[in-house]
Amino acid sequence: MPIDPVCGIELEESLAVSDEYKGQKIFFCCDGCRKIFLKKPKKYKKNIR
Image (cartoon, rainbow, N blue to C red):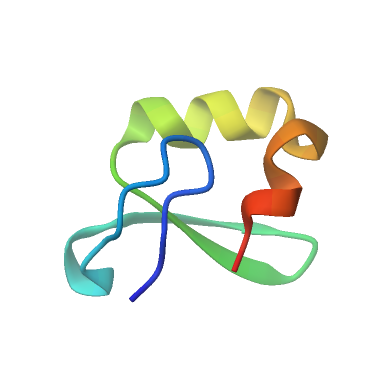
């Protein structure tokens, strides 16, 4: 299961919001976390699994 890199919540892939960063699909619990990530991806990229 993917984990939101911003808040750390484990997600059900089919229910998650997703986006791509450097060719990798990333999953988020909500659009708010996606927006936070996109503003400062370097801060959260270490949390991408």
